[in-house]
Image 1 (cartoon, helix red, strand yellow):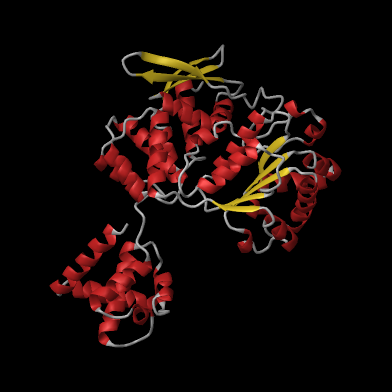
Image 2 (tube, rainbow, N blue to C red):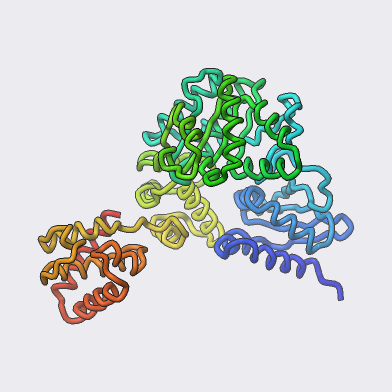
Length: 469
């Protein structure tokens, strides 16, 4: 019995579901509808609820979707998105993915693709820089936390031959915009100096290519290629930690480029002083140029980033929602963008306007963007204030009744207001074992059943802690 095209699409969804997390599947794939399949033309038509959905699927899941449909529909299948347009019917958009069946040569730019070594002798116009053209200075919003590295990056893009900022070492936690900034530098530099050989790649891909060159006996080609680059941008250089042979190769490439006046730009999630496992001679060279820290975005920058993203996506989001998001999602630019994507997706799927209550609900149920938790230090500080005891006594081993109560209450509140494990709480507060921590939590819970004064104190403390989030 022949399986119908509609059932085959259901099979495609099952395969996709097993290759993404459940939230991604529920957000981006459950709203896709099967429209038609032309057997002779091998053309599959599916519909999405908005242009944004189509763009997001193409940008983030294109390869997965095409590999899946070619497998299930058994051949080189063309995929057409039918984008629903309110009051205007629909618009068809053809996916530009090259089928894995028909693909005979690599596309110019793919995720996880390193440049071919044969490009070392190719003219500059044939070198794929691997830069993301969407990450530019125009959409890298300036704030206090990124002003220095952004300004230095612009200076390098304008005058890549100066050696004052060579190497440029940009460091900061994940999601603050390091990759965006270095791509903006490279993109702007290529615009101003098209004759320059610019290359961006991750340290992981550098390591993979180095290993392949050793295995395939092409190490000389590997070195010749990288020594021909005018501006080398390596993302996440900390991924070379512990890889002695990779570090050895990079050391010699670094020396050659630096001695010949070529620009080197590196990013890391930590400063050189914290990179144990990296050769000292490399660390010395990392510190010989300019170290620029990208910090977590401050409140005003978070608001500016949100407004820019909202304007770019053509959304309508009230100012009180922007204020709430900027106050409560503070870890990274990436999380801010994730919240906007979630708000848009849920508003489309559930046909709801974005208001403050809706935003609060989405943020609380979005991984990594829930309202920031209270620190253990803050809990101990507030408890010590109410009970008029020293913070060091709560952390210590005193057995005085008022201190024991303050300590037990701190443990209870830490269990309620933080994500710390019971063992971690015990380690941090008096170096207590697992059983002692559980006993403290049980003691407070039992007292709450009969001690209204204690309940009022805990309610007061909880309100204070919530207000500091």
